[in-house]
Image 1 (tube, one colour):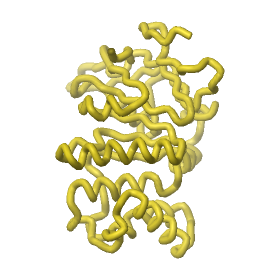
Image 2 (cartoon, helix red, strand yellow; image 1 turned 45 degrees about the horizontal axis):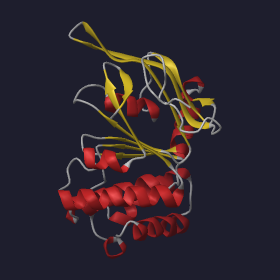
Image 3 (cartoon, rainbow, N blue to C red; image 1 turned 135 degrees about the vertical axis):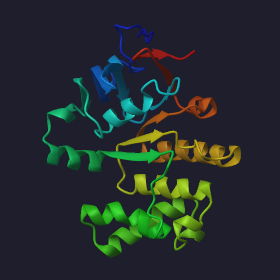
Image 4 (spheres, rainbow, N blue to C red; image 1 turned 180 degrees about the vertical axis):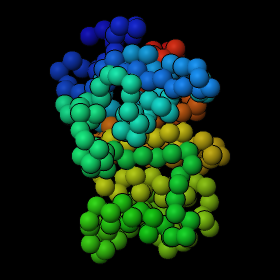
Length: 243
């Protein structure tokens, strides 16, 4: 199968027989700035199979984060569709969309948005408690994933006393607590030094292999992009294959 890209060909699956987990069709998004319309996404098409990893690179301000937010239903497109397991997310009402997003997608951001007044364990328990798990079950699950990301000795540390690398591991654990099908990461190593960045890179790939989750990472870090199974560039509102 020819996986070459053009304005008329989506980012495709490596194997035609694999049903896509994520299908993006003809995605458009624009913003108004001082009365002027700025077109950000101009007909993005993309397929991703379960378990695939994809890096999206490109210049600052080109729309990478916008694309990620739409994939995670944090924002709506002007037109186009995003199907997850065949379900068009933007055909759902707001309540069902929020439920679907919370059950299906985990987010990791450059600025990890942890709750500074709580410790590592409490931060990771939060989405589990919101989902309705008992306190005991939430604690058990949160502790398990924190140990897995290497924070066994930091469970009860206030997050504002952790290093940057440790804080990002807490954020990753929180994103994975509900075992999402899809992990969306926006510059997950943008604030980390080289050593911590490399550790997070390796951890992301280990978790991808262990949990079988699909991963889309927006990054300027070409070393991180090289860890992904595929890499595309957002250019002039479309995705093109990265050499």
